[in-house]
Length: 196
Figure: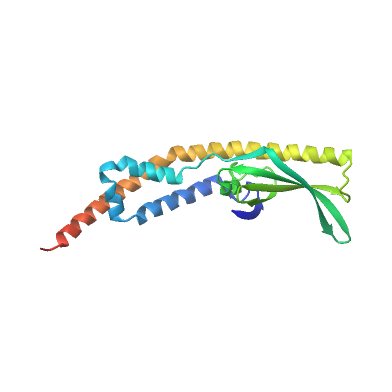
């Protein structure tokens, strides 16, 4: 994933979960009869395989090994400086687009994600890269607010993911049973049509 977006602000978790459930149902219905019948004697293995494919793993952003840089950006006839933070992501970065608060975005934070790295900037509102103590104190305050926002949102997001995972098997089983019945019926029809 290489893109820029509003962190935890693109879609609600419930919309994401609904879309994911629809994708699971479509994927199961696209399975061939032969593929489903291969697991007929070991149905639990097929359930486990599909659950594993769609299970949402925990996501974490590490503030421990961050990189920090001061970046100048040109505005009209002057340069303004920003502090850029680069953090490591553990888990699926796609989940960072999801709002875990059910459409209640607490903060607007535009970020860039490159593979497993999250980058955000804090505007110093300062026109020199020699940041004074007051500017540094303001940046520290803003950094701590952003860190709290990210950690709280990740906690909620991981809780919502866990709830999704608990529903996964109950959602998959009826669809798979229906698919297995249909595959079984189709195989009998094919056998009857296989004239000697």
